[in-house]
Amino acid sequence: MKTRRNRYNRRPILTPIILGVAVICFIHTHLLGQPARQIVHAQTTIRVAAAASTPAATPTPTEHDQIVGYIKQVFGTDSDKAFELLTSPTCHENRTLDPDAVNVNADGSRDYSIFQIDDRWQGVQGKFLLNWKVNVLIAKQLFDESHSFKMWTCGQALQI
Image (cartoon, rainbow, N blue to C red):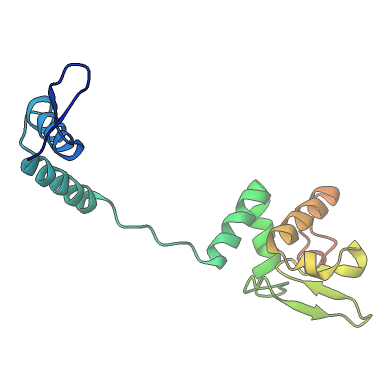
């Protein structure tokens, strides 16, 4: 092997590859206290053990579950009244909580999404009312203004 000499003190200099290997072996053997092969094995074992102990991913809630949770969150203690309006067997606005529901009224206006918010009465375009979170928030605002669901036909019939 041909060695180079430093021009200042004429001592041999190891090539960069050999120097790199020597440093890595030194670190593994002296600083970590294990030979390089055992460290790789230990890292693999740790990764496998960590993967085995990771809990299974929780299932993502369905859109229906998200809607129910959001109505409970927004309406709080009044959520039972909101669900009565929506799912009452005698009179229901949107029993399946279909966020894409659109009903055309006799006057040509349309009722949109979960709470069947009327586009003409509220002055909001249907594309916004079809966003079910916006729809729930508008319903909550209407409920808070009158402290009831009397603005809905079913709310009047159910007296809630």
